[in-house]
Image (cartoon, rainbow, N blue to C red):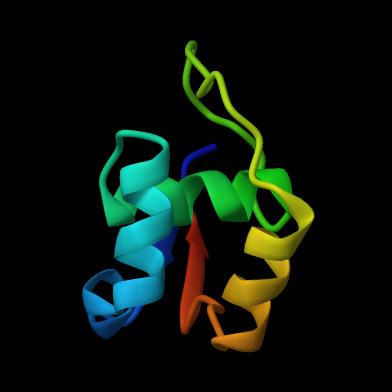
Length: 75
């Protein structure tokens, strides 16, 4: 089963999300994907997982920014 998250592209352009991504040397898209996995919104689907964990204040920041999928499709 494959999970597809549809998220407004504006989230990837937010300075706060871009800053957090730069802290982990990754892209905004990847850090958002990591956020969804770490918070249990989706289960990891790949063989590799990122070697970092978002700090509680970063998770809270994403939550406060309203980072939520507009649609989750399970295929």
